[in-house]
Image 1 (cartoon, rainbow, N blue to C red):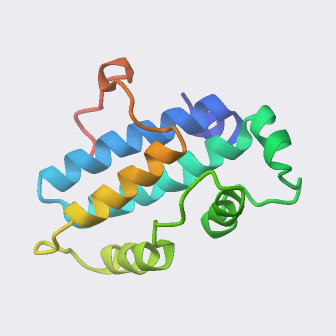
Image 2: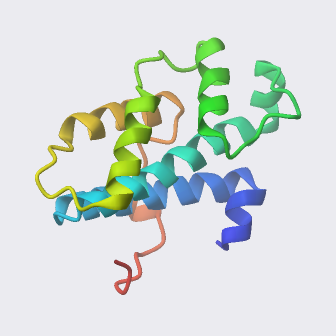
Length: 143
């Protein structure tokens, strides 16, 4: 999958979301907390993007052509107002955490509650669960 495909096709967006969930979890488990959080942010955007790129869903949810599929706030609002997600994911808090993680290493941050809420959202939009064995192997040279 190319980066271009992850922007252009629903399948590419879903694969990118799942790859970044796997990598984000791995990084968190390795103590690379900030890198893990930032990686999960990318997974969030592409998970939401995938859900809203599928033509049948766009029609069912009456998604406007003008919806920015890189604007996680707008995408989440559409899904919340349609009842697809329960509204329990605190995007403003997650955004603040991502901004902090981009500036500093969060060695002592207890990421487990955040990861649980993130995984709940990914489950609601059907990005999770998934079979990690079905994903392409990770490049060992990645961070």
